[in-house]
Image 1 (cartoon, helix red, strand yellow):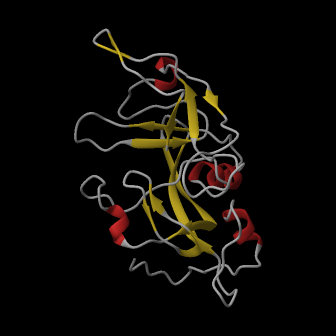
Image 2 (cartoon, rainbow, N blue to C red):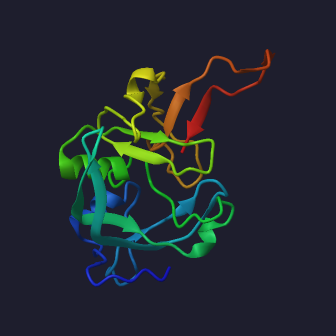
Amino acid sequence: MGYVSSSKKNPSCNTAQCSLAVYRLKTCTVDKKFCVLSPDNTATRTGTADYLTQDVVSIQSTDGSNPGRVVSVPNFLFSCAPTFLLQGLAKGVKGMAGLGRTKISLPSQFSAAFSFPRKFAICLPSSNAKGVVFFGDGPYVLLPNSGDLSRSLTYTPLILNPVSTASGYFEGEPSTDYFIGVKSIRIRENVVPIKRFIVVH
């Protein structure tokens, strides 16, 4: 909360932006003036409701090896939410980035704006150093010169789960999460019992 911007807008219920953002049944305010989303914290499984918001977002571009100019998406769609949704997350977290298969996730909106494949890669360091996320194809080079990290990555095919079992979804509705097929997990040679799917938010 407390987000202030002179260029932000709240698309109304009957706009294309609302139809794009709401992948479930369309939810609007009683007077049909605003489109409503349901931001949630997938770690603590808490959620709320807030308006769909549209504003300019700027991001550092790269050719994969070297930083480029700062580029902007003029009609970026997102939702604000109360700060209580940050409870249970790491210290200093300011918000949550949507990376799922929805039409207004960061990968989807950036790929549409800049005409590159809907792909992303995240580096999560084990130290206190900042991580980095790449949107689009590689190479993925961390400065000063790590080499192309995409060459050393191990890939696992993603599975499309045709029906979500998560709460908040309608029966028969495709999931927007990512799934991987897991046959077994071993920790120090001990087999860990698992279900058929592991969901990655």
